[in-house]
Every structure is written in structure tokens, then in C-alpha cells.
Amino acid sequence: MSEPLPIPLHLRTLGESSLTPAGKRHIANSMYMKAGAFLQAATLVRSKDGSEHTDWVALHLLCQGIELFLKALLLFGDYDQYIKRLKALGHDISEIAVEASKLYGLKAIRPNLKSELDELSKLYRNHLLRYGSAYDILVDPRSIGRDRVFHRLCAAIRTAGRADLRRKTTSGYGYTGDPNRKGRHSYHASRSFPA
Image 1: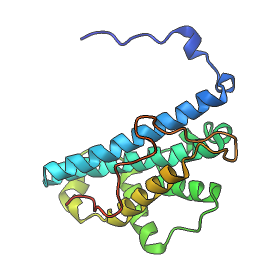
Image 2: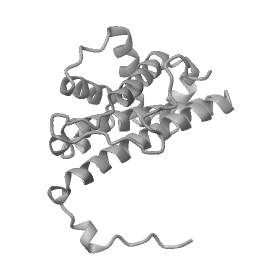
Image 3: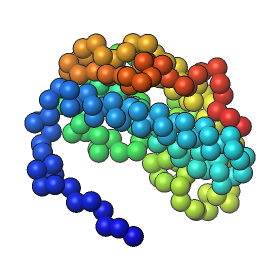
Image 4: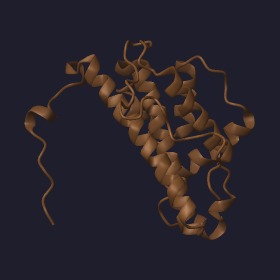
């Protein structure tokens, strides 16, 4: 097995303050695009096999996609404020969703959606979706709600694509879009998370 490539010293010491607005947009956009890849992977994995073990993995990929999407929105909204807070926000997707809602002036999450998101967040932040535990014996992952969250997430992705966050946001940084996709996304709220 080959050794990992060393990171050049000048890149390791590169401070966040030395990034240009274009560099900050690139980082936020990279996180946004990786979120999309995790969500596509979750859909693909779940559609290939309906086993419990596969569903645990699909749920983990879904939650990881949600986390990255929400964190990307925070970076698009105010990069300088949120880049320092991403690690502290951790993997609590419920808390990250509340933070993103506040930043963009959105209404509070509806109770039935919040309940589903809170359950997924609890499982995700405690690593119960990716590691084996007694929880695996007691719960069939296919019984864990995710459709409301998935549909809302698809709608948010479509809205972000239509808004084309390239316009100036609160910090002057915004989504630059994937030039190959021209603002289109392959997530559709009319699709359900494959059973």
C-alpha cells in the first residue's frame, strides 16, 4: 500500500483569513457538491438491496448528505462566521438545521418534520447508523422515518439551485454552481426515498 501524499507546508499553514472570496465560495461549493454525492449514494444503495444492513448504510449516507448540505448553506450565508463553528456544530443535524433556518430567516421546522429529523440526528450523532450495537438487535432500520426529511431536503436543494446562491449573501459569498450542471439537480421531491 502506498503512503499518503504529504501536504506541502505552505498549504498546511494557509490561514482561513488568506482565502479570497472566490476561494471561500469554492470551499462552500465543494461541500455542497459532496452533499449531493452522499445523497445520490444513499438513494442508490437503498434501491439496490432492501436488507437491514444496507438500510443502516443508506440512512448514514442520507444523514451525512444532510449535514454537508446544511453546513454548505451556512458557509454560503456567512463563511467567516461559520467556518470557525462547523466543528463545534458537530454531527447534530437538528442543531445545524435550526442554525441554517435562523441565518436565512426561515420559519421554525414543523413538529412532524422536526420529530423525524431529531430521531435521525440522534442516531447519526451517536454513530448508531454506522457501528454495530444492541440497537441493531432491537430496531429494524426500515422502520426509522426519513421520508419527510428526504422530501424537505429535495425541496431545499431545488430551491437553492433556483436561487442560484451566486447572488451576494449576508457575507458576500454565495453558491457558484456546478458549471457542468447549470443549476440543475437530480433530486426531486416527487420521488420518495426508495423503499
